[in-house]
Image (tube, rainbow, N blue to C red; front, top):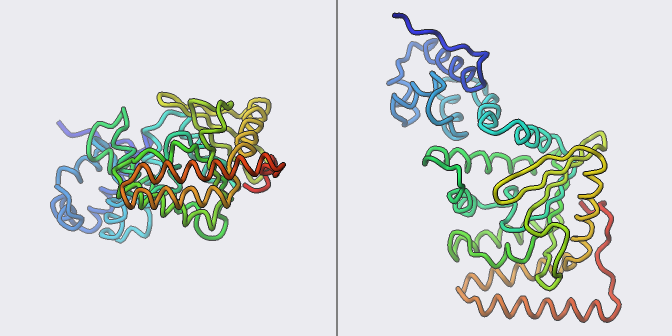
Length: 308
């Protein structure tokens, strides 16, 4: 019985597979031929052409595109294939993120994906509850690294980040990984607005979750609230306004930018020496300085969002 041809309209993975097979056959190559050129098994090529198994990684897609001289055809379709594995609301959020001109983040547990090093990202994503294979981990890491390109070049969005102090204290991936991540984060402070929300600030409206606020070219705003086991996209103006107020409160209660940068640098140095005592001392010193500044009547950071 003849095998039913793959319907390219059934999914983005199917469309990708149809293009891949067509490009391969146009060159007169077998699946073994193509596999040898991109250093994967023939079975992996067969999976991609049949839209079965793990989705392609960004790295594999670039290799296939180059080998087949596809002029970016496969590379352009890869983000859509990747997003297809997410629920509708998550795909909507990812699409909005790619068009946003201002991105404001509160990160409660980990460095935001936009600013992660690859080893740190791999350590975070390896713990994902829905992770089922090494291929899936590679795919997620590649996607996270690819999204960082959004912050480069003309048209890059303005980025403002509030980091909970817990982000600096949790050694994700070990001390070396954490040190390198904090050095990267410190370097990012020269390009983006980064503040640390100290433990001493106490309870706040976003306890237990993280938040992303997106401002679009037309001025409209969207909020994405995320917890350990869930995420939710908010587009109603009243909901977004409530999250804006919460974010502004967090910025007002955070350390000023210069003190935040110093805390990040001190934390990185602490990991360099593997010493939790050094990090604790640096945290205590910065918080004491912050307390003295407030008692002297020093101003908190502006609650406005123009610094995003």
